[in-house]
Length: 375
Image (cartoon, rainbow, N blue to C red; front, side):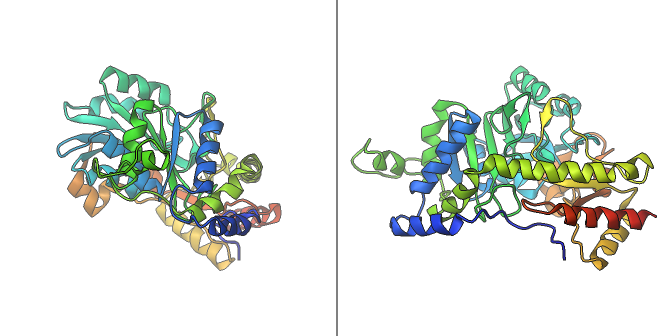
């Protein structure tokens, strides 16, 4: 059986988790949490990186930091994971969905400005499959209307837009370290903070609304409850698992890119025959091999292909059901303009097995099976 995903594992994870236990500091902000944060800040030239219990919680932190309240509006694509919307809906905001681009499956930057109202507070670009949205245009619109930008970079660790790391361009960036991501701590994430003025409040929010972080740094002699917050700190054992992968981050990235390019090469003949559509990577973007997907002709063909692959012991899956068509999406959001591509393109998309360490032989087997299906 060729699995759709196998969580990354380098061999040092167990050793590092054991070290965390031996240090008698397995809760948040232990030595490995600090090592991971410092690595992220150094690698991506971001003012502050704070590990969180999930990318969902990183996005919730961003919503709190931006003082999102009832009646505010947030613009985002409907083709995204539920957490992108949930983080703002739980603060009382209304989600305004706009259509996506069919080439990258990202938010269509040309539709944002028309969707802005006097209640709009935030734009949330989602970098689907680790491929950047058109960030120059998005940042220009945000500046023009005095809006914040929260990058959902859940899938985009190591990806760039015009040489800038995704997650570092907007006011806040949210990264995922879920087991399905390129780098994992099981469940976990990080929030990237661009403005140093937001750091102290972010630490308070992350530490249950207390100034405990300042206490541990010796800046105050006792800590207390000072603002709203929650428990967004991951265990240091989770961070220990992650740090083993950060140490060889470039190797993991290159391995995934090699697999991505092999898929692309082997499936290009099918695209030339007009049977499938392959991913598009704009010139200004460098992606991270997070996923490899193809697009079939329609939903019916996709379901037949999934079943065919399953019979041949290959696990392939479709992705998000557009949020605007869900019960909660209808209740807490609205779709601005016409849904030309969101539903149609989402029904065609099929994700193929992709993970650190997938072999060339396995990729050949997957692509051979797809070729046979279309013949």
